[in-house]
Amino acid sequence: MSSEKVKVDLNLSNDLIPLIEDLGLSKSLNDNITISIAIALFTSKSVSLARAAEIAEMDLADFMVLLRNKNIPWNEYTEDEFRLDEIAVKDFKA
Image (cartoon, helix red, strand yellow):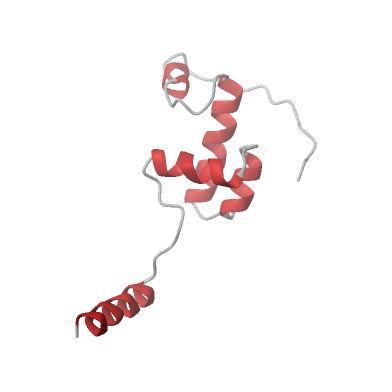
């Protein structure tokens, strides 16, 4: 999904730029900011995993690897799923 780009004039503190560059997300400051926004939108549950990957202009698999490398969980493991897994493990041991 390709969308039209809008140029934004962004004022950042000089202290913030090295932090963004050190994220190691991409080679360019612009890409680092875009990817950071995508991650923030995903972690705040504002967008889906697939949409966040699109925003970051990354393949879904690459975005998932990036999240894993940053120790950001990309999947939900609900309490119900946990209970079902506990039951399955108990049944397996029996």
